[in-house]
Amino acid sequence: MVKIGILGLGTVGTGTVQILRDPVGRHHLLQSIEIQRVGVRSIDKARVVDLPSELVTTDLDSIVSDPDIDIIVELMGGIEPARSLMLKAIEHGKHIVTANKAVIAKFGDEIFTAANQAGVYVMLEAAVGGGIPVIQPLKQSLGVNRIQRITGIINGTTNYILTRMTVEGGEFADILADAQKLGYAEADPTADVDGLDAGDKIAILASLAFGGRIKRDDVYCEGIRKISATDIAYADKLNFVIKLLAIAERVEGGGVSVRVHPTFVPKDRPLATVNGVYNAILVEGEPLGQVMLFGPGAGAGATASAVVSDILAIVGVMQTNSSHEDAVNSPNTSLHPLLSCSHSHYSEMATLSSLRSSFYVRFLCIDVPGVIGKLGTCFGAHNVSIESIVQTGFQGDRAEIVVVTHEVYEGDFESALAEIRGLDSIASIPSIIRVL
Image (cartoon, rainbow, N blue to C red; front, side, top):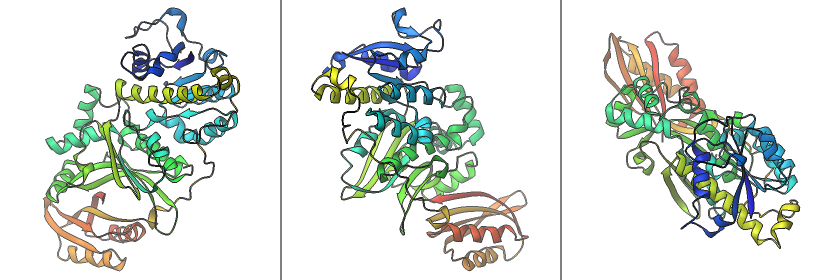
């Protein structure tokens, strides 16, 4: 039997235990897995699953150092003590399965370096996209492609909020408050609505796609707090929807770009139809072209499915060795190249100013003659070509002007905006949103 220790018995931990204890009709390898210990913060807390008392402990260190345990399943979340416990488990020759995108995005270099030296696996299918298989496909079935771009809706909370704003015409703050009441948003929604959660996930996907580690601090993150019902309405009139996209791509001239930001997505694109708490990841490469992976991005069942799939992958490799005893007692045997992390260098990152994009910009202006002309002149002076510029009406005593540009260098666009902000006739620029 392969023995596992589980750290955390929350939503995902509970779902994982339920799958492991109900193997009938599932993969036969589940029958060779035994839950050895489960680590929790409180013994007395009421739980959905009823585990024997001798299996449950608050001594997490004893689990990661237990010589009888082969695989540690880290489902605690947060940075510490998860990071330290994973490193200690690796030091004791144990494989790791985790759903912790924050730890992997910020400390993946440390964790994977330690794992490679120890000859153990770190598996993280559940860290991105919930139940959507994307980590292993990038390592294996899509690995023969030259990946050019990954574009994803990979945060269910923000997609739920933006979907409701689109359908109901409501404002961000009101729908966020309702989402919190319904349990779709955390009491502290910062990681979700400011794009930080999506930033962790796209850093992981970029590392796999481009074969180089990504420094989390190099990922540009812009959230959805500034998206208004007015912007949603304009997007609809222009035949777009607004989505929070996480994008990783190779940049012409060298380097890669990894970023998260709200985006106008044409209604005829597949990502435009991904609504509610669902996630989708569009992978573009050569020679495959495009493939989109779609499904539930969170929840006990979806995420636990990914967790147990990683456990099975490790168990399968262990059973192909000459004996289970050799696999456990000789952790420095060669790692399976399609399961392990083989790269150790960092990807060269492109600057944001070197990227090309189209933009939607909404200006509030003092209603004086010649404002549109001045805007056009400023944009033109910085090589920003305008697709359309329209005065759409008034907000109070301010004229509202909407500009959509052609694809331009972001550096040129920012230079134009800097000059425009200095114009006496410009009261404010409430919205700047990229266009896919």
